[in-house]
Image (cartoon, rainbow, N blue to C red):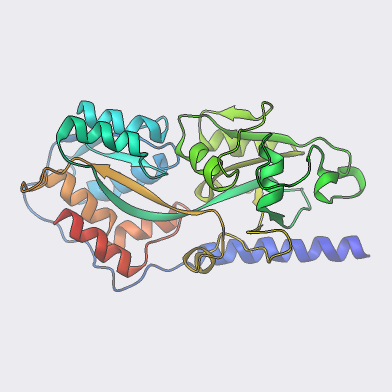
Length: 321
């Protein structure tokens, strides 16, 4: 009876998370996009895999206004964005983490000024388990112990689901771990903010993309993995997280992210080359304005991510005008 009740409660929690994700609304104060004349041509986007779908959907929306525009989107990891901007092979450098100081230094050494970084959306970096997994909360100490051999948060060793408190058939099952490769901004963000810069375990199955992580967790019942929440599917569930052992667990819903309760929230960025005192190329400027428009933020929600608050949009628009 207790097991059935617990399962029912978990199903309600999962359903409420799905409903809350669907009912996220874009702030109506965010300006709607207005078409301008003189926008055409080609551009390249090289960088984050996490933002691959977002960039593609933004491009589809943008081309409704400018059918002759073509932007090639390539997502092999955030670390590929800064070199592409420096070499001039890309006009857009999407990244799921901030640029590192050494990346900024190389950019500035080449151009004589720093990159312009635009916050485009919010993401709850999610810890995924298989949809049949009964676990309903993890602390960052537990997450660290699952993924890292350094265990800088001080938790004891974790090898099985029983070590995380699961009973019955789950108790003695080894945890199968999925993650991203080192070119990924998600890899770097998770390492810094979840593992306190500790080293990943050798047995982490590194995947080339976020979708591969989610697919692995879908097919591997006793597995766990991490990626942007926009890659959530029906085969996995997102585990609510607590900042510390014994503290409340929060899911990656909009209120928890903007209220800074969810511990692995982050911005998703677009980096560009903006020469001081020179107007931006019309294609670049208008694409960024579209991303920061009401329509662009609706696409963010459509892709499973979280829209920017109005005040942040206003700050970012100032950077491109």
